[in-house]
Length: 395
Image 1: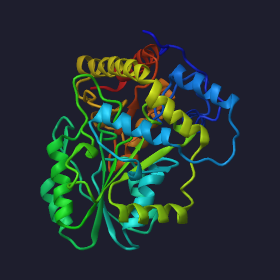
Image 2 (image 1 turned 135 degrees about the horizontal axis):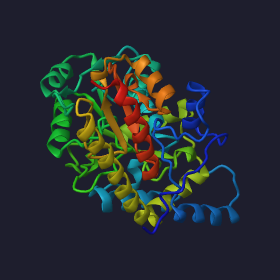
Image 3 (image 1 turned 180 degrees about the vertical axis):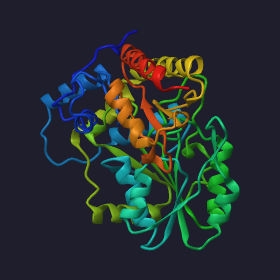
Image 4 (image 1 turned 90 degrees about the vertical axis):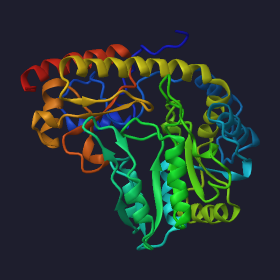
């Protein structure tokens, strides 16, 4: 490999939220234990980005900033090259994070007391965006088969869209925590049903660049222009290139009136300023670091296959599926008969394993999310510890 995906960085006392939460949850855990929870990566950043930021600092005044044409062109060219999406500069507005992006969408396009639909299990802040904005959450749960393969309940979704109180739906594509890709037919059907009932569609596409080999992501922005006129899309380079600490995302809206309303909301929320280094890192990522990303995806694919094979061969009652996208694996431990509190405590105290609680994504007692974006050796070592524990618990 051209790039280093094996070096293990010590992130203790370095301001890492993931590592700090690990220490809070398990204060007696050894300091060198890598947590597999919060969705950032345990890899060194792309050297093209780091070297570019160093050069930029040599010639930069760290004052107030705003995006340049280079920033917009980097996004436009990237979405065209990687996702077959044709977008325009005037459709793009910067936001600190994708979470800020969909929080602002809820505030801009619904009113207090309106209902907003989500499809759980799904990323927890979708619910927060609804409730913190004093809206009402309507859950349209995903349909699941015995292997936890998820699909959209279109019948229920259409029924909910016909209710006057439901004004918006927030969709995760690719899906977190399920690691699945919605098809073009799925996306077109969701948006058509929503459009027919004057429901705004908001799509979180932060995971769109981490797609496993042999799979294809369909960006909403690649669909028919007329179909997506009233759709809000939230994107960022931060997930694929491990840049979350630089706080730079962007929202894409093709309708000019909606964009004006959205920008006004960002002004009110004071969510219209981004990090000058985040702007630069986004440009460097999209313009210079594509080769790094391609190698990263191969490492993630290797790791997810190792994890999948481990469970299939040794513990098939614990349900884990191959990833289509993302670097987080959704794992169903309900066969052990432990509730989530006991499961997480047992994993942490007896096997030095820290995962994300499945309840963060909905009513998912007994589930955890395993972040496999770490050196392969670290993932393999974790499975050895898990194997030792499951030999006691698995029946």
